[in-house]
Length: 122
Image (cartoon, rainbow, N blue to C red; front, top):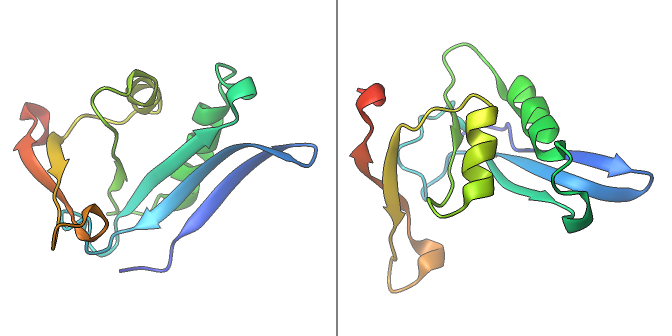
């Protein structure tokens, strides 16, 4: 949908200690507009967790991705407490809940479908 796919890496020496991807919308995320971007596949080296690196990496990604009129998405599983806390600390608001579907029996070909919209998103 757009060409803004990017990877934010935080390095300590030559070791990658954190990664945040910026992912444009595609068929698996039909709720995203053509100019929207998603912060996803966020990872921090286990020995470096709890030091605020994820918030730094996500903040850099948000600054890089921001454009007037663009919505920046952050999807996480409801049970992932660390990811949910990171999203709140970065200023994201809950817009709704959804589920992953399967297409032709394959999760890889499925899409993420919004099933409920939060009150603040209406």
